[in-house]
Amino acid sequence: MKKILLILIILFVQTTLFAQECAYAEYYNLTSSAKKNYSEKNYKEAEKNLKLAFSKTNFPLGKDLELALSVAQERKDSEWARQISINLSKGGVPLRYFGKLKNFKWYEQFTKDFENYNNFYKENFEPELKVKFDSLCKRDAIFTRKTMDWYYGSIEITAENASLEANAILAELKNLTDKYGFPKEQKMGYNYIKRLNRIEDYETPIIVLLIHLYKYGNRIYESDIPQFICEGILNPNAKQILKQSSGFGKSNGIEYEMVVRQEMYNIKKKKKK
Image (tube, rainbow, N blue to C red):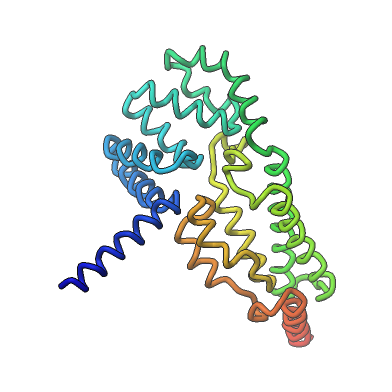
């Protein structure tokens, strides 16, 4: 009995320490519940779960703040809507996004104070990192489309040229990380999409970039994924997604991967003749 009690105490201590070290350990479960509450129009419970989630960290993620703003509007909670709006504006979300809140009494003062919030963003985040990371993701997307066309045999790329571009994308991510730290909302600010006038997460482009690099043959930052989850960079579900992502060369490096792909292309080319 004493042994069982000792084991339970050890497990409790380990769980408690993990929760203390991993700021987003409970956060993701709570925000997931809030999303379900919102879809079921249970706005009271959604508010409860979101507020509890936000209490677990000093940096709620942008997509969750956007959900909270919708909940606050449904609940007609003016003060909470104001607080959320200030958080978002300090994270780089432009004034045009908040036009839907004009009916709140605090909106006029909010617009007057907006320059201060914008200055906070410039002083506490890295707008340059955001621009460079977005550019890197676009470059990677273009290259990935080319590799898909190469795979289906509609265009030809040499293994050497494919390796050069894949290595350049990898090097650019490494350079950004060396200079600024790994790209994340806490450094770049919130991912506002102008054409949609809404906030998206940065988790998706980060996962997509890592998946592509893993498929190119290099499993960079794989050992850091548990820490990325704890820092709110990746959702816990990302661990399994990334684990299953690999290229045709069994992750033996970019050059080897591209040689394998060129051989596959050559086989397709011969079959077409």
